[in-house]
Figure 1 (cartoon, helix red, strand yellow):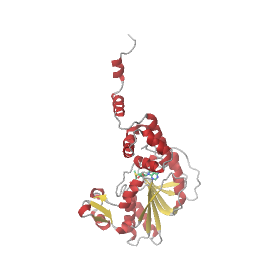
Figure 2 (spheres, protein in one colour):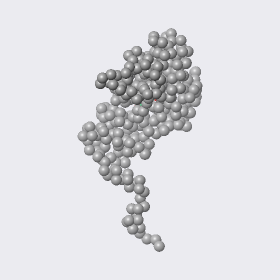
Figure 3 (cartoon, helix red, strand yellow):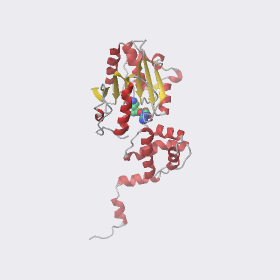
Figure 4 (cartoon, protein in one colour):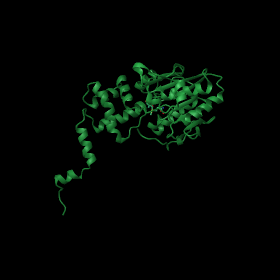
Amino acid sequence: MSGPVPVERRRAARSPAADLAAAIRAEREFLMTDADFERIRALARSLAGISLSGGKMDMAYNRLSRVLRARKLRAMREFLDLVDGGDAVAQQQFINALTTNLTKFFREAAHFEVLADLLRATGGRRPLEIWCAGCSTGEEAYCIAIVALETLGADAPVRVLATDVDTDVLRRAQAAVYPRSAVSEVPLARLRRFFLEGTGANDGKVRPRPEVARMVRFEHHNLLAPDWPRRGPFLAIFCRNVMIYFDAATQMNVLEKFAPLLLEEGLLFAGHSEYYAHAVRRWTRVAHAVYRRLPGAGGDVRPAEARTEPA
Ligand SMILES: C[S@@+](CC[C@H](N)C(=O)[O-])C[C@H]1O[C@@H](n2cnc3c(N)ncnc32)[C@H](O)[C@@H]1O
C-alpha cells in the first residue's frame, strides 16, 4: 500500500552520515554555510591556485576557525568579506590557514642523488643557483644546500633561493629550529656533519650548521602571481608536492614560466606523485618526476590529462 511516509520513517531514511554532518554543523562555534564554503573554494583557487575538493568543508572550517577566533568574528561570511574585499592581512591569513605544509628532511630521497650528479657535472666552477619553490618549513632547501656541500665541498658556489606563499612557514624556515624527531631518518654521519644539537632550553632540538643555513635565502613568493621578479638562471628548480594542489591549467601556466628560468642543462624536480603528461612538448622526463626542458621547444603544449589530487 502506498501513501504519505510517516515522519519517523522519513527521518530514518536519512543517512547516519548526513545526520551527523547536520549535527556537527549545528554545533559549530562559527556560522558557516554551504555558500560560504563555495566562496572559500573560489578564493583559495584565485589567491593561491589551491583546488579544494567538495569534501573538504570540515577541513576548511577547522583551519579557518582559528583565524575567526583570533579576530573575534562570529560568522565565516564576515571573514570572507574581508578576504574578498582585498584586505591584504586577511588574504595572507586565509592562505596560511589553507596551505598544506607537509614536508621532511630528504623526502623522496632519490632526487638528491640526481641533484648530486647534476652538481658534479658542472664541476662546481661557477656560481650556481637552485630554486626551491614551495619550500614550506625549510627542510627541503637545507637538504639541497647539504647535498651541494657534500658534492662540491665547503666552497660549493651554490645559493638556494627558497620561496613559499605561506608567511608562517617561512618564519619557521628562517628560524631553522627543528625537533630531534625531524632528523630521525638522517644518517648519523650526515647529522653530525651538518646539524647542531640544542642544549639547555633547546634540548631535543636541532638546527642546520651556519655553513648550511647561510647558503639558503627565504623569500615570499606566490607561484600564481602574474609577475615574477627577475630571477635565475637556475641549475635546478625544486617544486615538489606544491602543484599537486593546482588544476591542470594552473600547472601549465607555472611550468611555462619555469622553463626559461632554467639553464640548458637544468632540471625541474616535481613530487613523486606528480606527472606532467600535459607538458610533453616542452619537457622531457629524465628520471622519476624529474624533467628537462626540451631545447627550442615552443610554447605549444597539450592540455589536460594532468594527474592532480585536490587538497
Ligand atoms: C606539501 S608542501 C611541500 C613542501 C616541499 N616542497 C616538499 O616536497 O616536502 C607544499 C608547499 O607549497 C606551498 N604553496 C602552495 N601554493 C603555493 C603557491 N601558489 N605559491 C607558492 N607556494 C605555494 C604551501 O604553502 C606549502 O608550504
